[in-house]
Image (tube, rainbow, N blue to C red; front, side, top):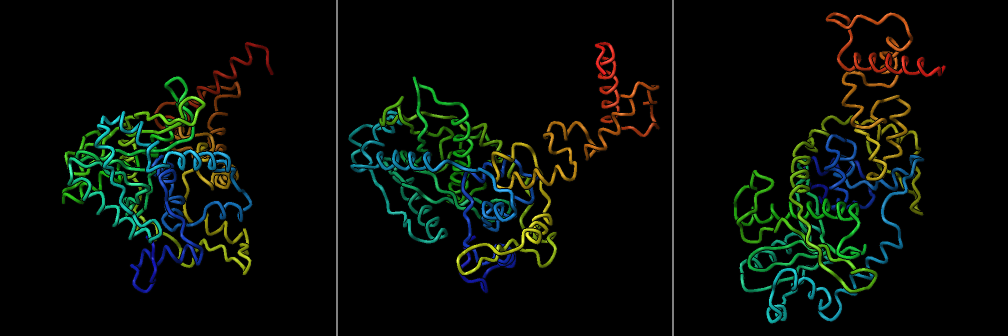
Length: 405
């Protein structure tokens, strides 16, 4: 999705570049893609991510910034741990990987680390990674470490470039390696951290599955739990390399990501294609922050909010911890009285009732102590409204029995 010559770009890519304006394109990483897959109905996030818009700067200019992302301390600690693992020809990293993958020590000495052109453009890096992966997979006796490869994954008709920490290729298959700075204490790590890492790694596994299928000239397997029998196909168990206890020594922890992979594939398949989202967008809408010579955004917040509101969102309370625009979308949901602010479960239970006011009005029909309304066919109340009436009556009876007014 990196466009160097707009005149040669396809209309969708050119329109996405117009939406972003002259600002640098923000890459769609695995964390963002995992969050996007968790909420595939959000057209707003899908379009902003496809255009490479800086959602952090966008939320700041809208007046509702989110304390989102890792702390600088955690990022610095992770970089220090990763650099320590790569010293002396990756010797510290290779020790736990060799033990976990069962590679003899004499084979580990012949490790190949190809140059993946880290300073090139995303498209060139992805092509170089694909070539290196194909070459490594063709040598069943070799052992190759791809350091920060760049993988391409098609998301809703738009390419995304993903960068795992490492991929180990041996015996014609590859294993995703994710380096994390959270500790493994007495053989186990924090479940929340492991779960987040598994969702992120599942995106890399999916990208490698697509790469292996393209290399073999075959379609991707329809079964999300099926193990591909193709050269360069990924294992469905990834390795998390973390500090052991409170030391700086690494330990490799295997994590089965089949469930996360199945969820990711299902959710991404449900996403609306980007060209359809662009077709529904009113003409002249852009998310350009119009920065001045010093780089400060100058576009009025009201004008920017109108542009953002032109793309429907699918807000849920968990967006606060996964999306930079979570606070802005929450404010919109509250102002509109939308039931989405109460959670996906409540939204699903309320059916055709779309606002809190509608739900309260339906509940008040049976919560005031008067005669119970008719609920048979023709009453005008759907199943959700009937449940609200019944719940309101039970609440009123309980409060009356307890003497609460």
